[in-house]
Amino acid sequence: MAVIAYFLWKIYNQREEEKNEVRAKAYTEKKESEEKELREKYPHLAGKLEDNWLEVFASHHERGIPLLKLAFTLYLQESTKIDFSEGSLKWDTFWDLSEELLEHLEKYHEGSTIEHEIAIATYWQIAAEAVGKLTEKNSVIEGSKLEVEPYTGITKIVSLFPKKAKHPAKEISFLDKKGSFPRESKGSSMIKDRLRDLGL
Image (cartoon, rainbow, N blue to C red; front, side, top):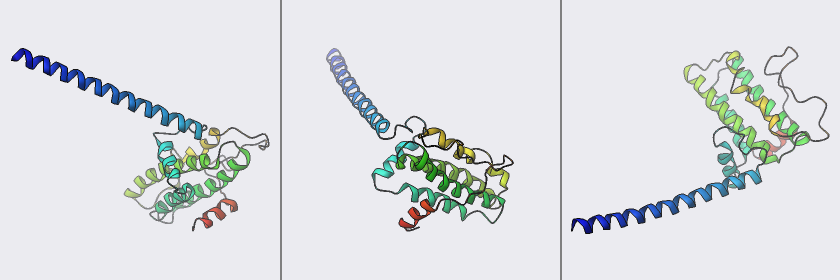
């Protein structure tokens, strides 16, 4: 009986291993297919964004969630937690620069509008998480606290998208004349119109 039980156990284990191998192969093939699809749809972002934010925001987009509205909401929900201080002024400037950057990308850089918005939404997701940790301790934030990573991450977004032939001689800058970050910005009337169309 012990010998029979052993062989039955061995056969069962072998079948389970075969099932696991089939499941693992199917999972790998599905993952590879999804990654290929992301590379095809978002060639400028695939493999370049932190963590899996491309997958997250691409999924939001495919479900019909406006990413520009989502990015603005991330900015707005944290701005309400910051008292009027140097930190709050810089936080507002980041949004104005985001608008300006989106318009600049659309006019002078390659990539689809949705790729540009995914890059901006990723920036705001990371920045909102970081400033949320700051406001847990104190709602009054020193400006210098927002002059470091991840807030300076906005400066890296242009490098994700190659320049078009009509790009100006100088790249968009986020520094003022003294070299301080962030510089002042009036935002973009074009992006403000889009936000208005989204009910914001």
